[in-house]
Amino acid sequence: MARLTARRALFAVPVLLVVTFGVFAVAAASPFDPVKAYAGTAALGADQETLDRLRDNLGVDRPFAVRWWDWLTSALGGDFGRSTVMRQPVAEVIGERLVWSALLCAVAFAVAVLLGTVLGVLAARRPGSLLDRTVTSLAYSLEAAPVFWIALLAIWLFALNLDVLPAGGLTDTGSEHVTAGQVASHLVLPAGVLAVSQLPWFTLYVRQGVGDALAEDPVRGARSRGLSERTVLLGHALRSGLLPVLTLIGSRVPELITGALLVESVFSWPGIAAATVEAATAVDFPLLAALTTLATAAVLAGNLLADLLYGLIDPRVKLNEM
Image (cartoon, rainbow, N blue to C red; front, side, top):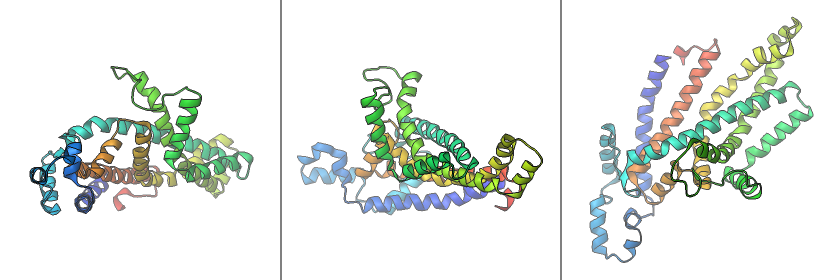
């Protein structure tokens, strides 16, 4: 396990270097003017000399490779620069918002995995039954639905029509303190929507994996020995059927991050979505590079976690050979 982790960490270094360099290159080619974004409405009445002086102070006229190298050397020392659009250090921008994004993603991912496993097992027990057809049809329908459409539909139903859940934000309007109860109630809709967007994949993978396992000789042998259906299903078929799901965990991380950005924007959740959008439109080089590095590291960590879980559960897989 330690050797696999070390190899993946070494592999992550060039990947992160290429990704951050690409961010600076793409941002440099962007049609957005970072100086006008930084100055805001004041740029409308400013003369060219003032804008040029501001451009020089921000250093945006330097080659993007030079800006990338300066940012990289500073980041290695723990200084990720200062966000021009947020007017505060990048580390503070991310630190203030990352905890809420992590909470949203963790809750949604856990719900999607648990609920998808339950629905997949129920559907696989009796292939072709009414329950199986209902679950698979619903999964395929949700798979094709955009996450922002699901979010808007959830707001219309639960916040506007039924008025049982808040439509957005982190706390109630006018509240001066952040309480656990308010956060929990405001988390239900965005986490539920994000979980629903990930649910079809886990449901279909579990259904297929458990269905294939139930048709294998070891499971048939367990049934012939007189073991109960619950023991056969949970003790034999489910363990074998969950193996493909482990590989799915790592591959779903990029879409989970993308979905979280959309969900946060719709529900005004105070995560990194707003910072990402503002950094992109304002060509905020330091903040863009830091957020992209964070997202890339999360994807690499998800892939590593999937491989580790696969190796721990399946004795046929040797971690030292991966």
